[in-house]
Length: 265
Image (cartoon, rainbow, N blue to C red; front, side, top):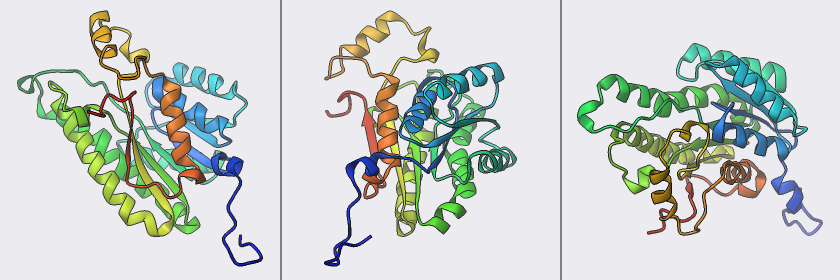
């Protein structure tokens, strides 16, 4: 809208941060950071599809936890590394919640640490499937609607380990590096349609899959965080919710680290 003197009317601050009327798909979102992201988007007003592949009971519990916030949501099962699975996920979300405006690429497999000699190519391929193939398949599925509406948000979950060059983690870092390059290229390609593409890279934020990590490792990492505290899942969820809204409409192609300053040096 424009003002009587011809200037573009600016939306209110509340409207800039509201996701009311938007539909989001968060892959791998029934636990950990994914669930926190879904809840943050829902709290901001979006209708959110939570995705899982293996554990139905955990998925149902996550949906109940999400809906307890008062937000509207849907649980969808499907593989994000197979074209047929992605098509089915998107079709189900569109039928239940409406067309997808916000895509958060979060699903991830296990990430064991090993020297290069102990990795085989099958493991490298699994990393490529999740962090390069999956973003490609998902984007291809949701972009027609986003382009038609000339509005969309694609948010990739990265990791600080790419910037820090963590050792004994080479397949994961290689695939995340590829995803970051794809993120930057897509940001430029899609900008004319009003579609932003960004990456959020958390530090080590203890969630369920970190339950077996040793206390000594945790103590060593915590001692290095400039802010002097652990991150919590809501730190990541809040950053994603910001990027998903109109307040971040001029932010694209970025990789935002959510790690208390660990990659400042």
